[in-house]
Amino acid sequence: MGVIGQGTLTSQGSVYTVCMTDSTIAQASQPKPITQIATRLGIPLERLYPYGTTIAKVEGPPPAERGRLILVTAITPTPAGEGKTTISIGLTQALGRLGKRVAVALREPSLGPVFGIKGGATGGGYAQVVPMEEINLHFTGDFHAVTAANNLLCAVVDNHLQQGNALGLDPRRIEVRRVLDSSDRALRSVVLGLGGPAHGVPRESAFDITAASEVMAIMALARDIEDLKVRLGAMRVGTTYDKKVIYARDLKVPGAMAALLAHALKPNLVQTIEGQAAFVHMGPFANIAHGANSVLATRMALGYADYVVTEAGFGSDLGAEKFFNVVARQAEFAPEAVVLVATVRALRYHGGAEDYQQADPGAVERGLDNLAKHVENITLHGFNPVIALNRFADDTDAELQRLADFAASQGLRFALADCYAKGGEGGLELAHAVLAALDDPHGLTPLYEPTLPLKEKIARIATRLYGAAGVAYTQVGERALKQAGKHAATLPVIMAKTPLSLSDDPKRRNRPQGFAVTVTDVKVRSGAGFVVVYLGDIMTMPGLPQVPAAEAIDLDAEGKIHGLF
Image 1 (spheres, rainbow, N blue to C red):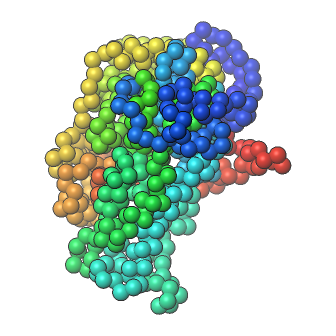
Image 2 (cartoon, one colour):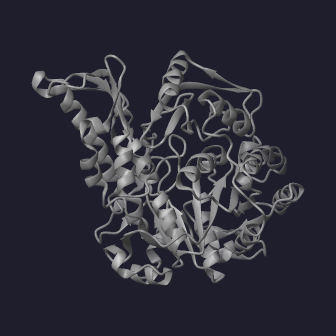
Image 3 (cartoon, helix red, strand yellow):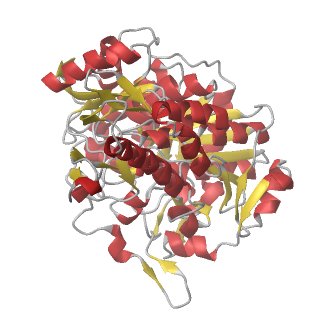
């Protein structure tokens, strides 16, 4: 959403009439000094590394974890948008209004989506984290540090080939690739080392977007500097001519990489538009990585706050599944309540409506199949989700009642959320529902054990979480799976697939039936501690749309940025 208009948005039927963009709302806010936010949360000021007056990095270690973790996920994304970040921030603001010591932990935006299709990623309306422009652009330089460290490793690899290749690396089997925090399809396939003997060893390669790099995943999962260095050293560089794996530690470069990353490893502290603490740190995508903010930031939030709201990227089949089965295991913390975000518009879309902005109770009824599957996915992991209906002005009472009836039939808590229009006030109903959910018996139930064979882990995720009838393998996928099994049989699985469908076909809406997913490749990310399984045609370097968001962004003569939202 980009503009607040006129409509009936609250469960009480109150009407508001305004016309302000997300950016003008953020720019009109008056953020408190970051020292005040830190003091309120109990963070000693000597642990702050300020970036101006409203941003700071925080030195660890945090106090012992005491907070209760609330995970926000969503149904399958649609062009209508589900507003998961807006709900996460609005819920945090609502808990703050109830007098709770609360913080939100979110991922940092990538410049690729900011200038491409999605735009900014700091919430919307009156549920935002600020300063919006800095967070959405260079922020504290974390992504640039990840890019530099990753590309240092790549430069060392190519220099090793140039300087005699003592390790015997096969140039055709180099696994690490250069990265850039931009969407640039022209870099999906490149040839390096052209220009003669003085310019390197020619070989084919490609660029990934920074958020898809293993270094980003490592930064999001590392516990401290020593763990970071061990993980960087464990990154696979490639294999020799006789198929021996070469790691980054064999090239003696992890120390230099860690030096580039040392400051970026510290979590960033900002605030919501209503003054609650927000830890915004690291940004792996959920469709090609694990889709959660850094373990360090979440641990810090849990150490200083009594309640911590975090989100998992995309739907429950992607970000939430990976949070449950990968992040929680590695970090050794788990959520105590789960919020499942839905919109009437999204249900209309999944129900086949041609115009999802027009009332269509029949389409909503059909679209409930998608919501039901995501409820099932969360209950499979041991939680009864709170259904949060992110309300739009065109929602009708009949459609809202059908959602409430569905939740009641499933024995689930249901709350209307007007966070976009009313900030924390609009999230109070949801906050009360979440606090009640925290009192229910709960416990994370992983979907699989690490000792399960890789092929069975893949099948379990595909059949139980996606509803697939089976799993097919291309020749490349089958061969890659066998190789991965030799080196990483006990690692968890990261499924890389489209976020736009429960299947691996983005055109299949709602809750597809009778489909099979196809494994096209498998890659071991031993530093991050997982195996990436690619389903269908997945790109790790996005392209720009026909009309990129960059065309609407501008800087005026006073230095104010416009068009990020």
